[in-house]
Image 1: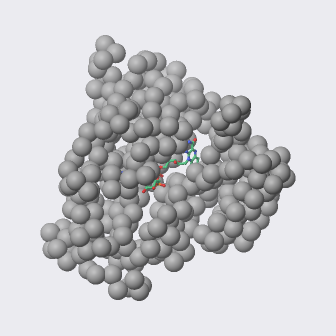
Image 2: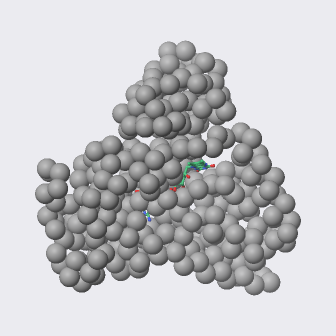
Image 3: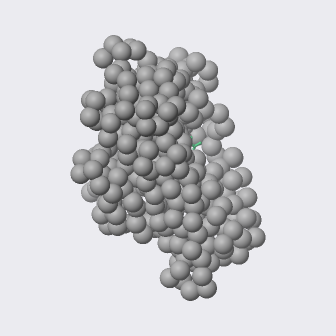
Length: 320
Ligand SMILES: Cc1cc2nc3c(=O)[nH]c(=O)nc-3n(C[C@H](O)[C@H](O)[C@H](O)COP(=O)(O)OP(=O)(O)OC[C@H]3O[C@@H](n4cnc5c(N)ncnc54)[C@H](O)[C@@H]3O)c2cc1C
């Protein structure tokens, strides 16, 4: 489809005036700070608005992309020939009682994970404090089974409310239904499933003050081991040899192969953490893809290990 010729979503413009914007640059919505303009862009305030937007987009054959915090997304410099939808429903409901059974938090997809962590700490609900500093939204975290400090979404999630675009209905997914694994969920293979909210269950309690001390410690560790600046966090997943069960840290492999500090265009392999590709100014999507290819080739040649990308690469027409 030619740039600027996107069929207007007239019906939605009429129902929700001002909801759909045109030609919105995507770079500012991503931690990489890379991405040209989206032909269409919307920030739904309610799940109903999101459902209407994606339904209308599919009807009109317009590619859509659900954007959370943009901390794991690499857009094209040519932007996106479709509609980028960034959920802005962010309510967080805490159900904390003296008994373990009542300790849960339900958070809408657009809520930041950091807000969920803070809400949990405020109610002495413990476990997520090790995630402090993990950016992004609840929607993105559930889809990628985000985690840190030995805990992942799978350890807390009791249910997710999902809009199934194909079936046109809201479905409750259990932890098992989501097939959560290392940086994986069934949602990765099924973009027609969109997270509207998630409920997390907490088994442990720890006073907020003690959690705050742990958080400070975790944050200072993150600051010491991860670079500041523009990246999408770890570019590659860690690997496990299925035969020997040996775990390989992608960052360590990159370091051992002497790739730290390597530059292609505006992208540099961080000198602090080999798995962080940093936009040091003016990087393009192609720079990142070239760097990814170089790293994969080098690790394969020198270590005979296949690395797999963690970052979500989005082409201008929505193919991934
Ligand atoms: C400095 C830094 C540190 C990081 N540290 C960690 C870490 O410790 N652990 C870790 O796991 N990750 C880490 N990350 C990566 C990133 O923060 C996580 O992957 C995060 O969960 C992505 O969430 P997001 O909302 O930003 O997702 P986005 O980048 O916005 O989206 C990621 C994917 O999720 C999809 N998506 C978003 N919302 C929804 C929804 N509502 N329904 C369905 N699909 C949706 C998008 O379409 C896309 O495919 C780090 C990133 C940075 C920049």
